Length: 169
Image (cartoon, rainbow, N blue to C red):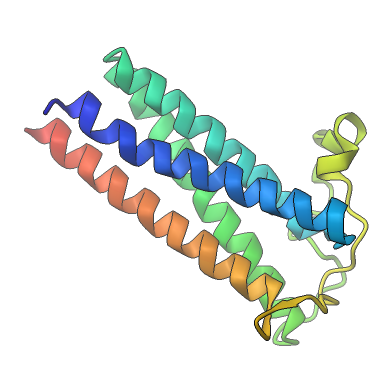
């Protein structure tokens, strides 16, 4: 099996996972009125970026453009890391471990990247960080999200490690 074919299924899992988590967040928002906070919106942005980058990696692998993979892999891993970072920050606020006067560690991103103006159904923040009262099976939705995103990021690292190993062969 060649390098290009062996990574495509793994990258597809990453892409599907990113878009599935984004879709689940949108369903919970629009069907159950779970309003996202600023950090939740940022996590959505990282998931959208991760899903898009993994699709671009699939395309690059499919046509054998390894040089493009060298650019896309660090961006994909950065998007995954930032999703974990933002979600961890949110859990720390919700549990009261840290206090924050601003929900987001980057509170002015909306001025420079006003996605909420173009896609308010996806990127409009209406919730308040640290005030999540939504649970699934008795566990905070934020904790479920952190678990999911951490598992996804771990899988991204595994696939990146395989990509490095295959390119060394």
